[in-house]
Length: 125
Image (cartoon, rainbow, N blue to C red):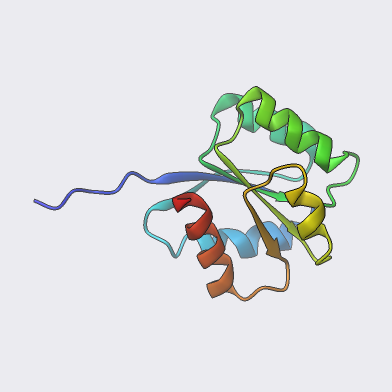
């Protein structure tokens, strides 16, 4: 009898609904990944994370109204997400985000295959 893989829980936080929808479509094509929450702002994200910390958080690096580096530090300190991947259209955000200890970086122009590969690599590291 084949052993079923446990589904990994993901939460997406981006202020643009079209970005969240596109990411959901990309993620739902992977059998053992499940989007368990979506947020458009930091306040809603905190609620979702406190209710059920995900295995992975996909977080917009330029989230309006929040200093994202401090927010990532807070999430880590409080144990509210297993891994954190930040997303940005600015390539220099990769280095900025790595300095606060994020686990991965997605450029918002990356093709779907690349996004899935980054998610898989991050979850398996």
